[in-house]
Length: 508
Image (tube, rainbow, N blue to C red; front, side):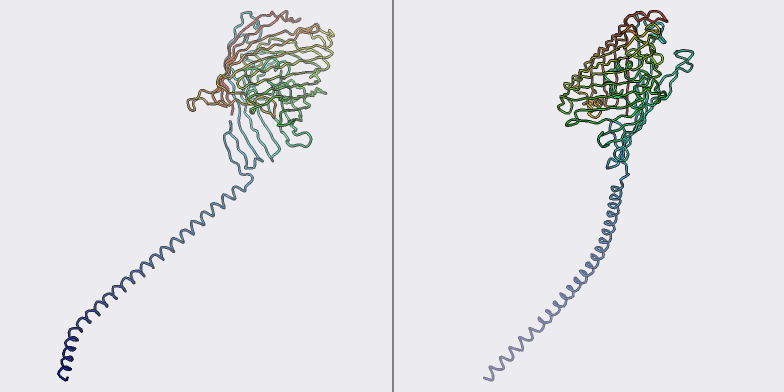
């Protein structure tokens, strides 16, 4: 038993001897592993510290950026909230306005330069000013400013720089004696949204009579209006008179207009009238019994009348050619009564317009009753009591757009506005808008023993609209005159003449 015990002791000691070195190796390995883990933890702590520092910097930068954005947004909000801050845009002219449209402002103008040649085989112009001479002439050159203030007050200031006068009246109208001066045209203020009446316009304005008269000279179908303009609407005052007018739309969708006003019956282009009485009361009503596709198809009817106290108790009717070969003072006169005494003048006018897409037909008739007229020793024997003398004029015209456009109808005015080509010249290979037209115009100043003459005219036209702001017009005219008697200068023989004119016009 003892011998077996010693054997177990000896075997145990030998096992322990072999085990102790192995345990020591495990401890060393464990220590190395702990050291490596500690080193990794230390590196991780450093990396975490670096990330935290970067995060703090990034947070600061983001905070600064947010403050900058807030400041810009605040600035924008402040700018939006400024009711008088203006922004501008191009709307067939430069315009500026506040966001709420309470204030608007536009600066613009128009220029029309004409080149005219006349052929006078009957020598009817032989003794008149420049006769049938060729000419290059600025027909109109106007600058304007217009706009709106305080939401309901519109205003306009426009001046024309090519109104001709005789420098020396005693020398007569010859080229070296005619100069251009500045004269007002549209010069008014308009109050909108007035209870009961709608609008009140005060200033130098167009009297509400005549469809082509109320159509701006920027938008005329031919180079000149019909004879009615010279005879009735604007013989010596550019078609404008000082006065006050009430007007508004009526009917559903504003299909009708009415306007009435009192004006000075002036005979000068400088926006003033002086004299006892000498007022005119003029009224117009228009209606669209047919209006479809935003005016692409329409029928316009209009009627107008005017009761007038003559300037200085006298009136005069005269008309010039359908092509103007020079300033107004130099243009030949085709029909002329001379100034004669009359107690009252009444005008009447009828309008009819039909538009069928690109086809336009337009006609007007205007007449005048001159009460208690007396001969003037020019177109009637001096002192002869003529009673009521009746004069009249009319025209009819038809035009067609070859490129598919149509005239834009302005409901507020009851007249036509700007032509907008489908494709402007030069944009996307566009050729602008092309329109052809023909007009017959007639006037009769022969009645009750007074012989101021009779004129008939045919005008053929070609219009090329390069863009909404510029056009080129070409007109051929053929005009026939009856014999006209003048007691002081002998008879003026009738005859005929023809002519061709071109116009380059632009407005903005």
